[in-house]
Image (cartoon, rainbow over all chains, first blue to last red):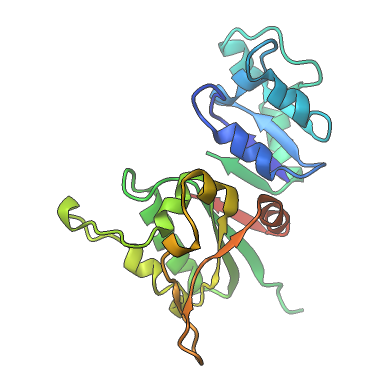
Length: 97
Length: 133
């Protein structure tokens, strides 16, 4: 199962809800404003650090660059649009819009 | 070879009247109910407010659609689930939920089923498709 989150964790509970439903082995993809969750040393970093123990976490390269995020939480994998398509091909997807 | 019945889940995470999403989602559910699919609907986050009983949209000047949820069972959509945590966060109990139909034999009212997040997560992973509203 692939979960996508496109909302910033600051001021929006979408990521929190997603993490309540994610099962071990599921994959999380952060995109658009969702990539702010992957930034290191924030008040929300612990959410991603915790999920990384049981799940792969990806963040979309274009969105990271657009927001100038160069320091990501260790363990978060950066992927591009082709990687995004591959993830969607491989997994059933729930978009936490 | 008989084709496998598709398992399709709808997740509703938005409150009912501020945007058109929940209403549009309801229309899609009714359309999909005409096909031979295994449909389930899950209400999470503000989506649980769509199942609040006693909604009256008269003063808003719109028709409202809680009444349609009230007959979902008649459309053969009876797998309607609500996330327990989302309800608790919003101060809702089973008593606050609207009725989605009645039992054919006993005429007992049927309410959406309240489930824990992990039970819903397990169901999600069994679906062929999940549509988000």
